[in-house]
Image 1 (cartoon, rainbow, N blue to C red):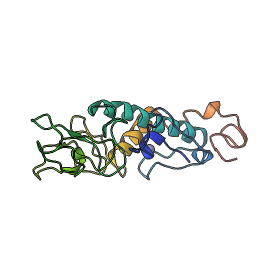
Image 2: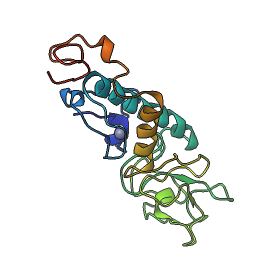
Image 3: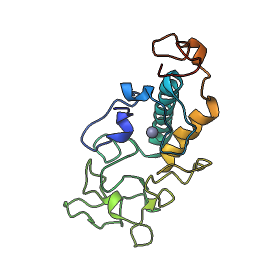
Image 4: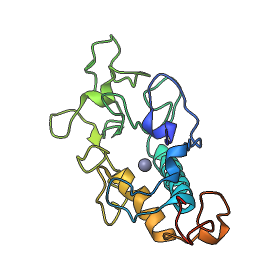
Length: 196
Ligand SMILES: [Zn+2]
């Protein structure tokens, strides 16, 4: 399993380690990311995958400051990468969550930002009269409106495009081949072949 847990497993229930990445043995084979990245193999795929996951960690640090990370609110664990609804909302011009003096989530408290759904910031959608603003493009990722989308944006969602682009830009197949002295490896039977 190859993941950045604080993105893949984001939850309103607990704070996850924001810098942890997990790399498994599957990262040593030849392949692409989502069929859209450069193909890498062996040691290069492993290193490219680490760079991909590290980019997810960088992204988490870039979006967490966009929500008001206050204890006891839906924002306490930062920008949500999961959960329903998401917490990518700002307070309205009245500086309250949801419509002013309206208890949208029916929990007996008006204008609150509860630590988990239901909560008023997330009950709104653009244009329905809730004075909150959805930050994003409307795509699954809710990429922040204040940040430029990755170019190109070919993976299933922009966060993956960002990580794919980062690896593609910063390394190529066989860049690390001469450092690979394993068996099988790129200096073993056939130069640059990872699996013999
Ligand atoms: Zn990824």
